[in-house]
Length: 305
Ligand SMILES: [Mn+2]
Image 1 (cartoon, rainbow, N blue to C red):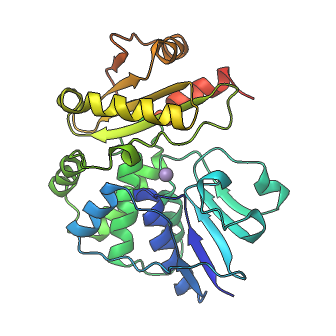
Image 2 (image 1 turned 90 degrees about the horizontal axis):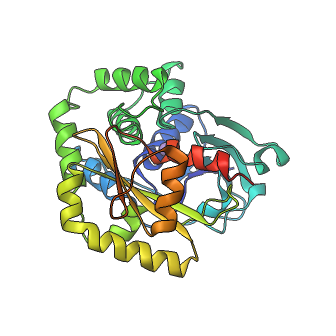
């Protein structure tokens, strides 16, 4: 029986790292494992693959009797729509746990870590299986990407320990290479809308809310160039998906601050009341790296279903 590892459509660094590395882990345990994803991976993934000359080898089709392993998500609405709950046999994630997992009695390791890559890194470290250089690099950048270089508050000691362990295995991973990757990641091409991640309404809230995130090297300069384009995306997506409260959290990965760009006054007021920040012209600067996850957690508590 084939086991197929997959994640949400348009996977990010964490999702891709988990697919690749967990596939290797399962094969080394003797399983018939493959990985599959839909859409295009996030730009950062391409940068890391190019930098270290790693190529992916996903399968192009999931068959009817394949069993599915979900990584870096447990939200059915985010995954390819041919995949139904009854096919899923395992979940590895660090997002809020959904009910279906217990209804379907699925084996799951879901923990509030900075990155889900940490979980698979730990499985390698605690086993007697050797991890390939490629998997170590991808898991390392899965952790670095999700934790903003281990700087966000959600970073767990276990994320730090695994990042250090993976880095120690691969001499090619250096701080200057990581910096270069961050800078390259800030050059926005024609896929701004995808990079912003504002497509999905939050299903845990009574309000119609979506918050995206951009991770860039110098947010103030970046907004000078791209604020109009960002606002166009917010307008377009809010109309298309009928989202009332929409914003994007722009995190400065080099200088360590965030600027939240709100679609409208309504969104700015709501965020302002909930987390105590000041908006000027629909923008709020926060002098630390606050991640979307942290903000959304507060808003979800106030407007929970
Ligand atoms: Mn993740």
